[in-house]
Length: 322
Image (cartoon, rainbow, N blue to C red; front, side, top):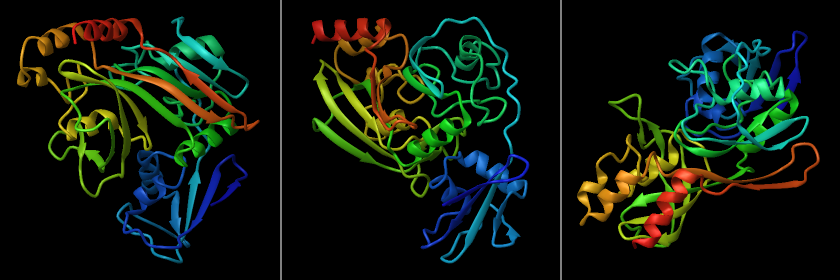
C-alpha cells in the first residue's frame, strides 16, 4: 500500500490488486485498510474511491492489475461536548491512552446517546483527541458494547491513531476477554471460525452469515460452574458483537446477554441457572487484557484489569455454589 498526503490535508492511499478474492470493493478495502467498511462505503458514494482513472460502485469486484486509489478527506472538527465524568485511565502518553471503560457507558455519541459517553469524559480529562474518525468518533481505535466493561485504546495524535489502526487491522493488538457462557463447552479449548454480518431479518442484530465478514474467536475454559463455563476469549478479528454471536452460534450464549441469549437459562435443569440469571446485572463480558507494541518506541505494552465488582460478585457466588 502506498500512502501520500495531499495539498489540502487529504490522505491518498493506493493499492495494487495482485489476486482476486471475489469480494466487493468495500469489503476488499475494509480488510486491507485501517478504515471501517461504512466509511469506505461513504467514500465510494462521494466519488473518493477510483479504480484506475474511474470512480466506482460498492458492487465492483476488484481484479488483478487494478490500481485502487482512496482519497480520505481531512477529518471534520470534533463537536463533542466535554463533560466532567470520572473514568479510569490505565495508561497515557502524548500519543494515546488506555482506559478501563465502566459498564453502561457508550464509547462515542450516537443516536439516543449524545451525552455521557466515554469520549465526552475523555475530552474533559485530556483536552484533545485525534480527529480521525470524524466529529463523532475522534480517537476511537476500537469499541466495546455499552454493557461490556474493560480496556479501550483511544488516540490523542493523528499519526499515532493511524499506526494503531494499522496494527489492529494486521491483528497485532492482542485483545482478551473474560466471559461466562451458558451450559458446558464440549472441549476446554475451541476455535470458532464463522463469518459475521447483519442479521437478514433484524438489522439491529448480528449473526453468523456465510459469505459476510470472516471472524475468528479463540476460547479457553478457565472454570466449569454448575450450569455455565467461565472463559478467557481472544478476538483475532473485531466484528460487531463477535464474541456474543459466536458463542450463541455454538449454543452457549453469554450469560446475561439479553439480545443473543434471553431466557436461555430456562432450558437448563434445576434452580441454579435461574438464580445465576437473576444475579447477573448485564452481559457477563469484560475486556480484560490488551497486549501490543508501542506505535513509536516499539516497546511491548501489556495491560490487564480484573473483573469489576458486579461481575466479580457473580463469579464468586457461582464458584461457591458449583
